Image (tube, rainbow, N blue to C red; front, side, top):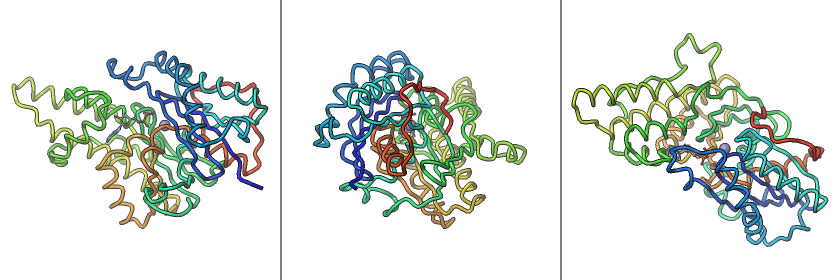
Length: 352
Ligand code: KG4
Ligand code: ZN
């Protein structure tokens, strides 16, 4: 039997992603983003995102099919992000996926967005594995740290399509959201992550000791694998306000570097604690914050020191995309899972 040809649709936030895979082989990963439209508001506006998905859906599907060199009737299955994410945005992707499944008479698989990020790592393709931190197949179990503007989650993945445990997540802001908020208070453009990263390169990460959320011993029982970034953001805001009120110049590079250090430190401390606690010698990163230079550098160093294999998919597969959803769909088909009923609904808080 040949591997299944699966088209995956992702619309949980601002990117309209349509990917096509054959089994583990990546054939296409078409993306349209509405980020430019959100930028002037300083955050993703759900209604704008949903409308943009609707406007881009057909052309993005067509582009993916052209890139992959396949025709609709050749597809074996459709996969779609069922949640979590923005309700209206999800609904557009789910509706498109249902329309394809019904009209082509193909099975439909609703998948979890967070698990999809892990699904990205099993993909093979020309030039793809070379870009990955570790070559060869993803071995399980693995710990996965998913960090973006919308989520900050720590997963224990024993089986991609049957045994994924959410160990912890942010109890307030996502890591990327914290980067965006701190960038704004430093007068940097949105989305702020890349700007903080750039400015921080010239700063001293030890200039200011910002708080590491939920790392004090009293939190380690109940919130061992959870994250909190809103206190850090407030602490940076207060530090900047006090200097400004005193008429002092703000050392932007030092603030950016010290803030970035605090985020990276807490992310990796908790992720590697999970590796240790569960005796899992593997850590996979996913989400847009993986672009962060300090996170990549520090993850490489700390993982090596801990004897943990670090896996980082290429950035195009770390940020939200359709290929990761198609990949997880293909895994479901190959492992003999039943398709979703056509009556399922998008669920903005879908658990893993
Ligand atoms: O995964 P993504 O493209 O979209 C979602 O949030 O779903 O992630 C975007 C987030 C934004 O918050 C952005 O500021 C952050 O990732 N980001 C970064 C960097 N590049 C993007 N954060 C820190 N350092 C970066 N280099
Ligand atoms: Zn995501």
